[in-house]
Amino acid sequence: MKVEVKLYGMLRANRPVGVAGAPHRPFDITLQDGATAVQVAKQLEINEGLLATVAINGQTAELDTVLQDGDQISLFPPSAGGSEPLRVFLAGVMQANRQDTLMESQDYRLQLSDALRRLIPDVQLIDPWAENPGSLDYDDDQARHTFVTMTNKASEADLLIAYLPLPSMGTAMEMWQAFQNNTYIIAITPFVHHWAIRFTANDILPDMDSLMMWLENGRFLQEIVPAALARRQS
Image 1 (cartoon, one colour):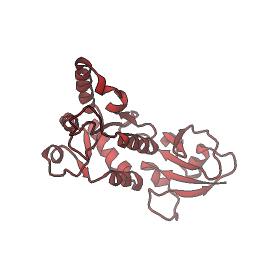
Image 2 (tube, rainbow, N blue to C red):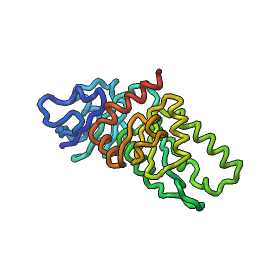
Image 3 (cartoon, one colour):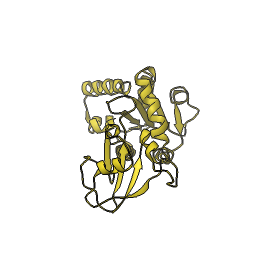
Image 4 (tube, rainbow, N blue to C red):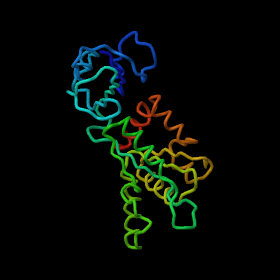
């Protein structure tokens, strides 16, 4: 049978010689029926101790999961910063510049969550909206506690991704808190001249598609994740 393999991080050094395409691109290999991720690693001469996580067709799987013809298998090494998973804080517009009690669409959080979990199966996501879906109905004491707690959590992440198609005071405060604690910050926004963004964000992208391209072409794993994890130890 034939499966498609995608290697991440240091495992790309085991990409077969002569296989066409860039290191981050997937490639096909042929296996015997009943093969598992362990057999994939052996065929690619990957030390089993360097294989931390496996995903099959975008879902985290066990090393001994039996593969099927046509499966897409992703192999991940241990995190660059140690055994702890990458912690990502999802910041972004909620009420933005609204003057009512409604909330802007939060679909972007679902898009980010799905994309990050596909790429890094053990990623730890900190999402204020997911943790507090009914926050607009909180009383003052509960709202105040939630605001302070979630803003502080922004400083505990390795990476903060801020989606800002509109201005957001809460997101600006989360970015500032993260900046104060040396957290790596990616801002997705057209407001490239706003000081709160210019002087806190490490990277500023114009739209969500640009970030998705980084996730797809390998830059996110090759450059952003190591840079973010290195700050954990600094």
